[in-house]
Length: 160
Image (cartoon, rainbow, N blue to C red; front, side, top):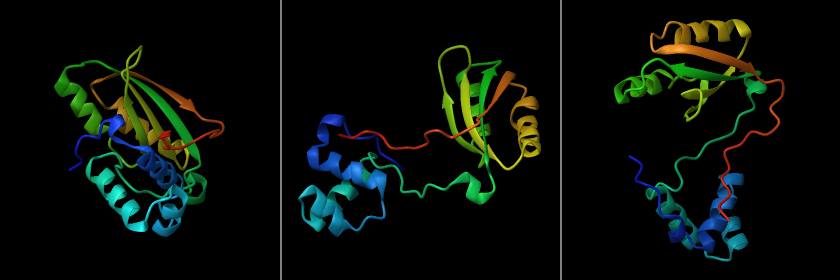
């Protein structure tokens, strides 16, 4: 279970420098990280562990090129919900937690959700759209946007 994240002011300059490094390359050896932030290896390790326990660092992942794994099409979908009660929204959030959905945002404005998906083909998207949206009785409408190019993709959060 992830604890709530530490308040921004509780992160000092060393924590922020470590965060910048691990976001770029979380496989960087602690020794190299320590050299770059001017701390001991043990201090860097303790700080990373503390930030993981506090929920500042929520995971360690490898970023995979969708083309390399046969999922070259990126699709953004806007979804309007029929019912917006807490229960209905929680059910939709759970419904959208499938592997094809890379990101899902509950948003303000004209739509209720914005999803980012990766698929192998438009036929795969058509089946997925049917399952996730068309057959979902709480979806009023959805709009599909096909990305022509992935100009900038990342999860880095400026920590400095």
